[in-house]
Length: 269
Image 1 (cartoon, rainbow, N blue to C red):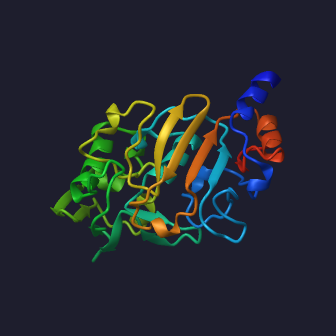
Image 2: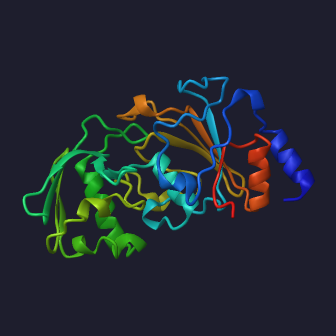
């Protein structure tokens, strides 16, 4: 991207430097590592510097989105989409504890049979309910397609995923696995809708149940999200919108951060 193109690109998207709290530089995988719940980098037009909610977070991943099918996520950009727009059965927190996601609770008598109770009234972004049939579809599909996470889910390969009722699903593993909940929190484990097969999504669609809805994707340029007001934990979703600007050159990302045109970058070394 030459200097004139960069100038034109940002002139269309510039947000006032006074209107935000800048400088959230997250190393490593950046937004690919977590959903944006409880953050407070805000656009001052919608929120303040006191932790109030609202505003837009502008991030600059180094790799553009090339796929929206969670079973085939391989890049940081794809993982970032999943963390914002999708949700796993369970979630690994920053302190490595496991908490509920699509599943509200679970029990296991022997670490081989795991029964999950799903959150009631949980919805996909298209308004359809998230059910046990969707969970079964998600994991059966991974094995049927021999998708990359099939190896990671090896304990389930010779076992089964059963629908007990609309909000209950049982997984029976080949053998006891004390780390199974940790495995289910991996970034390719987003629950997908059976009624809208991800195979047909293309590059500009993602139907998840996470805290943000993907609203658009322009290959090589931007991906945008808006807050999902129907999300079960929407009270802890701080931003109204998220924008990803794909800037492959580290120098461009750094200068854009310093200039106040974005709020977060990753892989700057």
